[in-house]
Length: 199
Image (cartoon, rainbow, N blue to C red; front, side):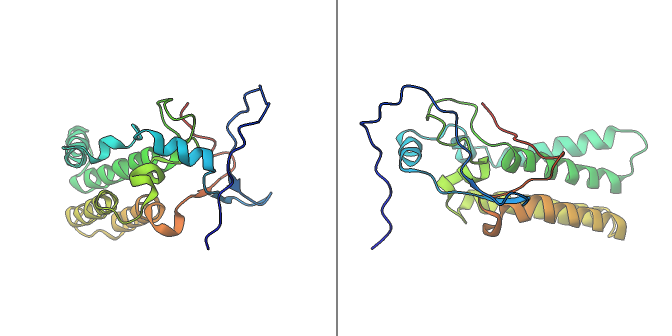
């Protein structure tokens, strides 16, 4: 028999509104923490309405916008004077990877207040497909930085310095945060990462 979830008490006489609690399990000096599973109330709030923050990712054309963004980044870096084609591809890869990390893994919460704060502790990646791993959308979003890495490596003529830079950045910033190993894991670097939260 599975573990039962606590049922909310409706006879609660609290009149004050409490701030959103950060459900992270963390040791005092640890830079790594794990987000606890949602409470009964949060799960109900999440299932009540569709999550407007992530429904656009599965809409028609959402996958194609990644190719458009990469094309525009490449076009921009080609127009910058004194940047070679090799560095142009590397800068395109770096910009896309860092931008997607900020969008999918750094910022928590939703810009819309429609669910009572049920997603306030989750990143956009954790909100996608209700947290289910290996969906077609998530597979696509993992494959785009890998394909861009291969393109940038090819067009930089396999230069070791640029290959190393692209490989390390793509692996650590674009692929590892999307793996199941790092699902609901937060890495806090004092002075660099802070509470990047919408709302």
